[in-house]
Length: 464
Length: 105
Image (tube, rainbow over the protein chains, first blue to last red):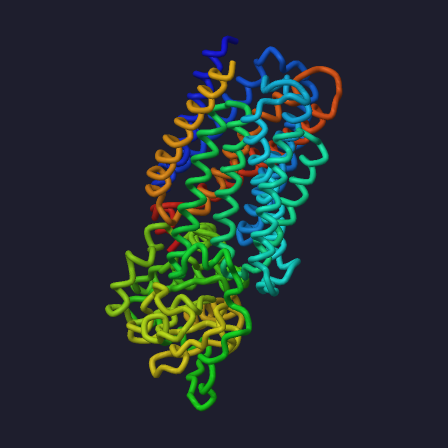
C-alpha cells in the first residue's frame, strides 16, 4: 500500500472518530456515533496490518484476541454503578500501552523509521520521552484513582508536609532526566524516567478526595489523550495526533465543567486536600436545632398529595443501588397524575454523567432527566423535592454563608420547593464536611435509612 | 534530511492544533447527560495507540521491541473492545418515552 493510501485511510479513520464524538450531542444519534467509532478503529487497525514491515499476523491476531476477550468480558459483566472504577482502570491501560509503545520505539527505532539504536533523532527522543512521561503518570494516577473509587484504598485525601514542593522537585528531576536521555540515549535513564513518572502519578492523585474523583477521572482521561499525542509525534502519525488531541480536549473540558460545578479552580482540585477533617466551624451549634423525622408512609402521603415532584439523586443512590426502586416509585406517582422529574447536579456521582447512566439503566426516559440550568427555576413551583443520596449539592449555605467551604458552588434550589424529603442514612455531614441547614427547616422531613429500602417502603405505602 | 524532519514536525504541530480546536467545539456540543458515554468512547479511541504497538510487533522473529509491541497490542485491545462495548451498553439504555413504557404504567 502506498504511503498516500495509508494517509487517506488514516484520515478517514480520524474523521470517523470526530463523528463518533459529534454523535453524542443527542441520545438518538449517539448509537450511530459509537458505530462510526468502531468502524474508524477497524480501518486504523487493518490499514496498519497492511504495512510491508508488519508480518507476524498470528502473534498480533492472538494479542488482539486475548485483549479483546478480556475487555469484552469486563465490559459485559460490569455493574453500571461501578462505571467510574472501570473507566479509571481503562485509562491506566492506555497510559501503560503508551509506555510500551514508546519503549518499543526506543529499542527498535528502525521499525518506526526514526533512526538507529544509539542514534535516534533528537526530536523523536524528546517526543518519545514526553509520551512516556505522560503515559506513566496516566497509568499510576489511574491505578490509584481506581483503588480510591473501588474502595480498596481510603477515599480520604492524604496530605503531608511539603507535598507540592516534593511534586515540583520530582517534576524538575524528570525534565533533567529527559535532557540526559536525549543526550546519551541510555536505556537505564529511559526506565528511570518511567519509574519516577509512575511515582509522580501516585503522588499527584494521593491528596485528592473521593468526591473530587469526577475531576480526577476527567483529568486522567485528558492525560491519556495527550500520551497518545506524544506517541503520535514520535511516529509522525497524524491519526494518533488527531485522536490524542480530541481525547485530550474532551478530558480537559470535562475537568473544567466538573470543577466549575464545585465552584473551584482545576488547580485547587489538583492541589487536593479538600474534604478532610479540618472543617468543623460550620457544624458547631446544631445540637439544639430540631430535625423533623418521618417514615416511608409519611413520605408516600406527602408525595401522593402533590402535583409535582422533583427527584434529586446523588452518589448515595448509586451506593445503595436504589435507582430501580426509585424509578418504580416515580412510575407509581406518575400513574397518580403527578409530574415527576429528575434534577442532576453536574458533580453528582463519581464521574461526569454518572447519574444519567444509572437512571437510564433503571429505564427512566431521558426527557424526564434535567440538568441544573434546565430545572433550577422550577423548584419554587414544585411541591415536593425528593433528595436521595445527595447532600452538598442542595446546601443553601453555598449561596449565603461566605465562610462555608462550598460557598459559591452552584446548587439545586430544593429549599424553594414547598416541602423537602431528604433520604439519608444518618445526620452525618456530606463529603465537604459541612452541615446542611436544610435539615433543620420546617418544610424538611428527614427520612433516615438505606436509600433503596426507603424507596421500596415508599412504593409499598403508595400501592397500599 | 534535517530540514525534512523539522517539516514533518511542523505538519504534525499544525494537525495537532487544528484537532484541538475541532475537539473543543465537538466536545462542547456533547449533551451533559452523555458525559459518561463520552468518556467511554474517548477511552476506546485513545487506544488507537494500538497502531504504534502493531508496528512494533510487526517484524518477524523475537526481540525486546516486539515483546513490548505485543504487550501494547493486548493492553490497547482490552481498551478498544471494553471501551466500545461499555459505551454501547450505556447508550442502549438511554431511551425515549415510548408507547411501551406508557402501556406498562
